[in-house]
Picture (cartoon, rainbow, N blue to C red):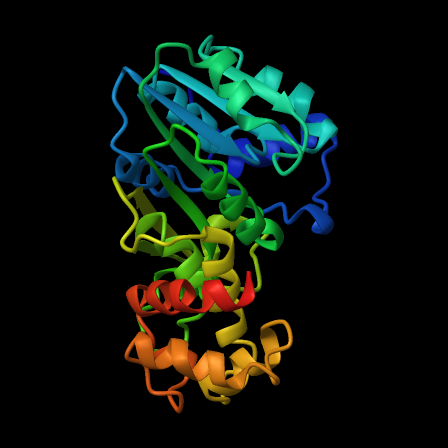
Length: 292
């Protein structure tokens, strides 16, 4: 088996060989501990018939572990300077395709069709660039791709928000937007010392597994997400005040908002952070006829 990329010595060698310097704007922090990578891959429960999608492979440290575990790996890399590096570090693996470009712009569904025909079990496994973690996850979840789940590293604070439950400080519209599609749990906390360069923030790996059906059935998904967002616009305000501010012509339609809250069995004086995803679903459905 090839020598792991993810050791301090090997990482330094590769960076030196290619004269590579980290770009802060791309949130580049490479993992230099093979044990962490093995744990991440284990969380994804891949088989020799699985496909893995990675975002931001860097110099290929996680990619090679995925290539050993899965049938096919597709990695999206935005930084052109890393393409020759990856061609070199992953040359031993013929089951890896590097897609050069921004995953936020990419047509991921088409890439999956082209690169993973016949593969029925697909996981996203990645050390996500911290500055675009949320947009990447939401894009992939909204796109309704044939993906079983996600095992992704991110800033611990974002992981806490994604996995938060009602009534906690971290719970917000992001928790709802993601938990609508998946079950979410923090799989492990990752120390700063396993990165080069070391980030200023704590990191965590979260495991997201797609629901067979969403935990709540709603008439209009985008309106449901919008209602959740408005309800947290000012966390200290009541649900009634936030909805009056956020809904079109909300102040003039206070009576309709109160009617919808009553129908959903929600006290207008409650704050958004106390509502479960099911309550938000019911509320959005009762508000829908008045505002859409």
